[in-house]
Length: 376
Image (spheres, rainbow, N blue to C red):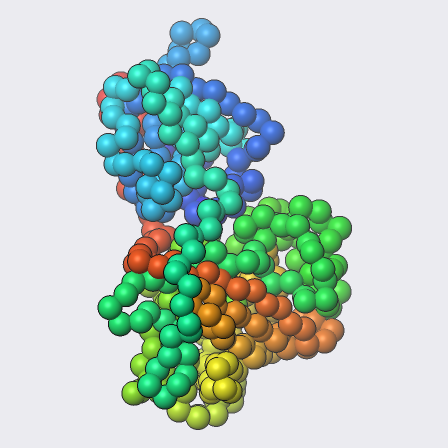
């Protein structure tokens, strides 16, 4: 997923704004591969996505500068890249997909250097984290399970077992990691939609999620924060009777769950927010959280499921063993769905690592600049 960032002048011609943080298929055409052979003019190792610029000579001898977009440095490091992986003057061959707008912009898949070294874009499907050592569920002195890190250790939650909210009665529905359906005919199975909501969901799917508010760096509100890339973590403060939920892919956004027994505020008395207002309590080994007062501006799930300000959630968090977080949610939004419905998935514990933050922010291309062969 990517956000429009800037205008780039290429050999005197204006190229469409470069994109960052987007659903790849909305910006690039997987059915139009491109092979670019040329000389590196610049390599930008920036969030939210790295960019490689290559001077490419066509059959007529004319040189044009191409921009090749890659994943974020956070993801590229996992695929073996470094900031020094590509240098100005390197001779490279890049395989990728053409931009749908016809500009000299491509999404990189593989880059091969003259010395034979090859670097690849990270795979669409993230590798599951190494399984942590089997241990009992960690607990606080009062007996409640610890949802976060045990003192003296490191770790966080990642690799959700489901890509999007799907009604538990729907069966297996194929979709990619961003919630894009493999078969649009399955849309009606995802949730018990009101007719307008089903139409909106299908539109978002048909347009390849191009209007996703996260493209504008808005927060992943609601259950979505437990399905976005880069994991999440709980910061528990039992002495203050509260828990903070911190997503790794959310520009340091955080959600607060109060555990002091307070009632939820009446929605007419508060300003709706992206994360709503949450009040929780322990029911045995399960944390039960009720939330309401959500704004409508965000997508509360991958894939573009709609909601209204009538949305209410009842979530359940449990840690049946050291390595597993179980998440269950009941969705009640009579303005959008014909009945309350539920969904559930698990996350895996990534042991021995700190959560790495992914920032949705501008590259260094927020002002026009020349990238033609005459002077970079």
